Length: 388
Ligand code: SF4
Image 1 (cartoon, rainbow, N blue to C red):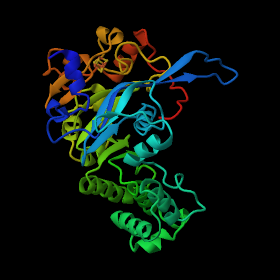
Image 2 (image 1 turned 90 degrees about the vertical axis):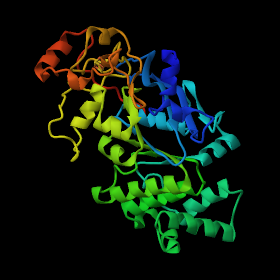
Image 3 (image 1 turned 180 degrees about the vertical axis):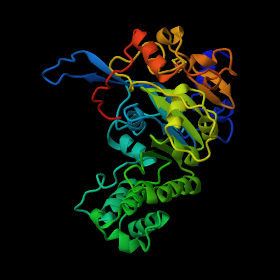
Image 4 (image 1 turned 120 degrees about the vertical axis):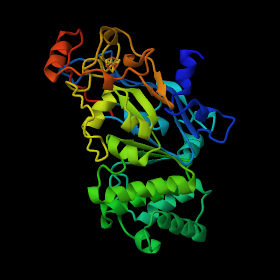
């Protein structure tokens, strides 16, 4: 099998057997080689004419019915831009999105309404997504009307009660009459999930759905989303900066860095046996009570790179304590590291057993010196990205 074909099959970070279309496990939503570049304008003082921000570069991802998939990365890595392309709120520069195997051409009108009925978003800030002057009932009934052939009266009331009950806002009539500001943060997020469910979606894109909520209620919302995905057979993309929650919540996890997916696999493998140095960096900065105390901690240097002038070769090389000469010039392809897990890192070229765990990390001071000597600056300030 050629490297490219194999890479495509591993695009979802799960074994190639799960990507076949002849079995029962067929993706409901596919992203194929999605790219999003933004033209960047200056601010009147500094001219940035003709510059391009590489928000997302060649990302492929599959979502499966009834499964939770995690998408993890730092702020500014492009995960929200990717989510907006999957929801068709942002048109890709190139690449394609397929819903149930059909290429999506939904920019406006009826086709767009049908698509967003099938692919709904749950946003980070539920308060911002509601009109403060309208009751929860008004918000949800509008979705029911649009996506259920203009359903009104008893049918709409029954569907309203059904979705509010599904998210445990009971008794439903009591919550239906409330305005957004009369609900707690957790109740508002439940109401926004109910509004998404009212369209009977096949896919839910949850972009940091709990990061604006109190820690004490996050688990309840995540458990609710996981239960709904399973019971309603909905594919759920859980977008987060918190790799620890992805481990417990998502079946598969993909890690994004500087606009690219750099590692993917089962959540257990990615979090307990991370291969890519960036994933290891994320894990070493995330509290995890199950992590072996003797696990090597790696320290990266600097900040995420500018996406206007991303580093040559491996985009992580200015920060990577394991960077080699080749890393500075040649982008690594995806290397299969076993059990459906892959990593975009030269450490695994031809030697899957060689990993960052097996290489002694240089001290932070040495790494800084090494990066300073490289052609690419060790620290570059990320630009004001449009939305990521
Ligand atoms: Fe580090 Fe090189 Fe692997 Fe990139 S390809 S993560 S620079 S070792």
